[in-house]
Length: 268
Image (cartoon, rainbow, N blue to C red; front, side, top):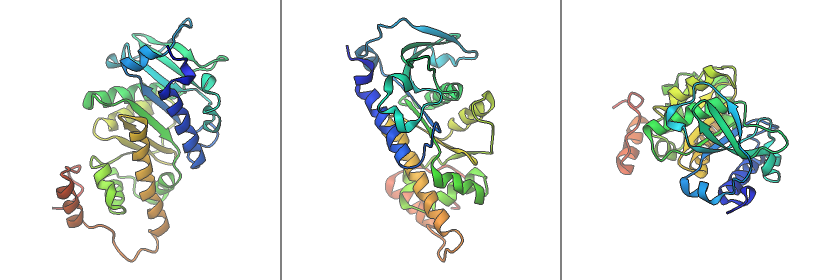
């Protein structure tokens, strides 16, 4: 058995939190991550501590019994890597809540946005059985973009697709966009989960971004790509002399890479 803090998946999560803080995307306790452990990973970790049950209503049925690694409420991503046992833990989802199995030492508990994470995992698993990860952070330029761009998600997606060749290849399913909402409550969790039934990325206006994926690297890569495009948009939208990648060129990309883009955005 491997001690919790020494498991490869736990160390990978710790490295990712530091990377995102270093990029300026997770100030103070901004951001959270959750990761569905495989059965093999569960079998490798020492769960010798007595579980602590926390009641939570409206648990998604398709998550019951799953083990999820998740960051703690109030955890500073700058410090997570060197203090895993307090800032990260593993829970087992139960019918009426969840049990803390390991981690979250000194009375810590999962992120206040845990319900959003559970709903998001549930929604993605319904459409993608390989899904495992939810990453939320405050990537700077995508947050800036929500102040100067129409928040219609098809228009938002089309703008991003036109900025970097790789965008339509990396996220042909587009992105979801939500208006500003109070974070951490049931409403934003339900709204986010609804968007994730059709795409892997959701932008929260004037707040940040959330991405889902089959691995930590996969979800982080989606955010990197979206934010790079947003950075180019913010640097050029008021001085651009070209229109970016046009519709016919986007269709050429889709044909070459054998991908099907979200309908209704590209004009045939």
